[in-house]
Image (cartoon, rainbow over all chains, first blue to last red; front, side):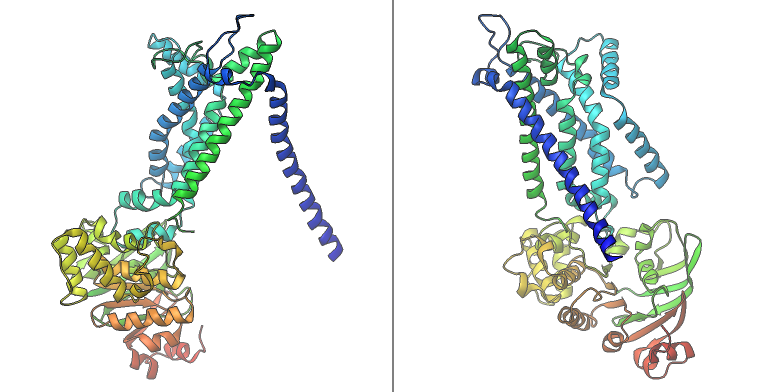
Length: 282
Length: 270
């Protein structure tokens, strides 16, 4: 009997280690392939310029896409924060009944599951109805809409982990709901919220479909919020579709840049999260 | 000093009656221990006094809990000022996610107490204490007095700005006490406040309660009979949601009137 239990114990441990290896190998594999294919195109010029190749006339620099993506994802996520964080804070038992919270949660889950191309199409419709062309603003608004359900649900989960006794402590001292939420619950949940924001940023910066119709494309750096802007996912898509080795290599190099940005932002958010958790109650 | 009385209090959790008509006058400036076996409604009674019960879902309360004649269950009652009068210590202390200083200053800050109000609380805690017209100084002075009264000052005076969550659990419970004193509470409610503490911390909390009982009404739930014997001036015995007997501690422990109380004190009933 004991041997069987030991076998089951070892079997599941083995399964878990195997799955962990799959995850690690996948990430390393993706980074490896992207680097291998794109290494030749990685250069200072590529990151920081908008130059065109004197031989083929193809663009060499992708600064427009890097800056465009940073504006789009950064702007979208900042805008989404203004909606998601108050929304997550109001979706608490302090303010709303259990039934309302459940209903809104289901709606958010459905919104989370909607493919981004649908958000792109809706964004495009809104732009058309306002007689506007694809622009940075259009892309930012669409990415914000895409990020709201992700950020709100993640923030709600973080808030639900705040111990109920912390709320009681605050109410017991005569605090109002807002004081309890803003000074205690929000502070306790803040490190987790940084992760929620990061999650949304990762989704926003990598999304192609949402910005395809709404942000458009431009060879130049965006100078106004009403101008079209390039983004890394669309640049990767265009370059992959183009013939010629340089374009192909650049597509993979741009993919590497995208991964690098997500990695850097992830590391920053982790550092911020650790700093913010100095005072939180474990 | 406020006076607390409970009249025909019934509490229903999801339709089940957990408190069955409690009538009780709480004696002022004394330690009142609510005793009884697990699940008898001790904590429910305590949490009904400051309406923390309402944070649980599907709770219905009927009857009256009066503070100086004002029913706290009156829809027009000012819940914020009522809760301010009652400091609450839970079973496991929870420091707020801020520094030690800010934990104690939390109450005065949320109630936007000015220097005068802060000085008044400081003077009520320690006659002849320092006063200042500068709010910042007055608050620092109040925090010091509260931490001293809670028996924590000497251990934390050098690290007031460090996170309160880094304190030991015993220190956290004394911090909870300091936090309650700083808001100008007139009563202290303790829900088995020493159950998560080690013997030394328990002794420290008990000593603080003893010292504070000349100024405050302290109502505490305990399932440790020896603790009730050590501390209580007045004892309330409950069983299955009913108030079986209450009276001065000496009477309840030495010559209980009800058979059930006698059986519980002897250890025959649990």
